[in-house]
Amino acid sequence: MALIEVSKLTKRFSDTILAVDGVSFSVAAGEVVGFLGPNGAGKSTTMKMITGFLTPTSGSAHVAGFDVGEETLAAQQRMGYLPEGAPAYPDMTPESFLKFCAGARDLSGAARKDAVERAVSKTNLHGVLRQSIDTLSKGFKRRVGLAQAIMHDPQVLIMDEPTDGLDPNQKHEVRNLIKEMARAGGESGAGGKAIILSTHILEEVEAVCTRAVVISKGRIVADCTPAELLAKSRYHHAVTVTLYAPAGSRVREEMLNLGGVRNVEVAEAQQGRDGAAASYTVFPKDAGKVTAITPEVLGLCQQRGWRVAGVRTEEGRMDEVFRELTSGART
Amino acid sequence: MHGWKAVLKREFTGYFATPVALVFIVIFLVLSGVFTFKLGGFFQRQQADLRPFFDFHPWLYLFLIPAVSMRLWAEERRSGTMELLLTLPITPWGAVVGKFVAAWLFAGLALALTFPIWMTVNFLGAPDQGAILTGYLGSFLLAGAFLAVGSVMSAATKSQVIAFILSVVVCLVLMLAGLPPVVDFIKDFAPVWLVDGVTGMSFLSRFDSVSRGVIDVRDIVYFVSVMGGCLLMTVMVLEGKKA
Image 1 (cartoon, rainbow over the protein chains, first blue to last red):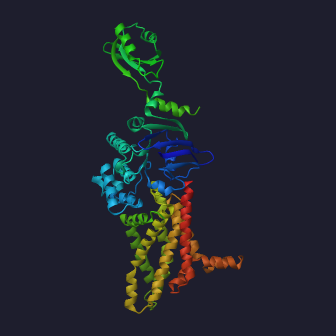
Image 2 (image 1 turned 180 degrees about the horizontal axis):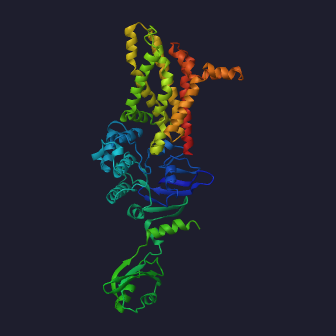
Image 3 (image 1 turned 120 degrees about the vertical axis):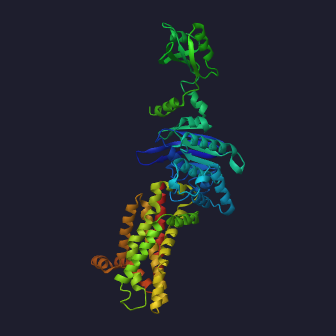
């Protein structure tokens, strides 16, 4: 059963602003869904409706089988939520803040102590537990928010830009934490968690997500695995060769004459020690094929005596797909 | 009401995490002392009671209570913690009641710390202890009513300044509703039932009778229903902002 079930969720803020327009998707246990989209696409609004902070204009969201609109409390008890920017009470210490959150989740006594301890050790907050939150660095604040979201070992975890503004090491830590939670499902045993995270860092989707949902102007424009998303790229299975060719060589024309080549782009030329090097990006006719056309291209280079300085076979370019999907929706 | 205890605890300790509590309590105690002894003529009256002390409470509360209540919701909305609070398994009623009770207990604590004046009056004479007790009760109820009004105003805006000003104005109107200038003004044209209604709305006249030692169930019911009504309105404002 899907732990998160969103159906035709719509949010209209005024007559002119339609923030979310009929969004439907579902997330099963063990899945990590990356919610992608430009700023203002409706990612945060969708998450706010799933967590019960905003009431949808129409449509519904179910979390762990509970209707967020009707059985708000039951749904909220089963999910953890990290709002954008990880808000927390600045005058509290992480310790008192986490205790408050545990109290709100009906944890008391030993259960509360365990939950706080577990969340603190998972997010490495030991060093700052007694310091007031407004004196913490951005990274620590984010971790306090994460600790609050995971302390009760929820089945469903929703995070709005969990790594935004963190340094590369902190990003790496947070991503590992997310992957681990999706797999293990925590102490409750059964399956993993269903996780949604929003981001506009595209590498993050490839790094942690099992699925990507791309949203633009309030509508879903793609819902597939990161690999499938990459396959939409025109660079999918293209080969980029950087080579030195003697003056007068008709490199591009000869490459075009190879079987299976659709197009060749000369990307850049640079002045090297041995004359001019140029990058040629060779696009295959059938990008869906399992093998790239690298051997054919390299064979040609060898035959003609062009010195190859570098070869890169591309899986696709996420940023290009992203641009295509989110700006193409306008037309 | 789910989660109200957790909210109550957080809010109440929250007052003491910042200088808010200290400043409020010190100012309240100093001002109530000044009013009682200087303006109220506590000694000159040569009477062993706390009338001059309680008489100034409505005016003290008019400015001090909105200063406490203005941050209840406006601050949460501005700092974004509102989203956290309302997505924890805490119902709107739980959050509203938790915050209100914490603020009320805090005001009650400030009120309780005026006990030296009770000791003073007992040292100087033999006051009517019952009247003093009802005086404290009336003052506590009045503080609660002001806080509940402030809670609605704070929920309605992001700005603490606006919340403060609106609370002062609404509380002032409710206070003065039954006083002669207002009543004289409207009784020229308004029907009797409206004049009675406006007089009945007055915080001051009801506070007066309770603090004089006259416990009328209707007065108690009035203050409690003002609080209940305002808390309901707070919940409605919060729910309305979700849509």
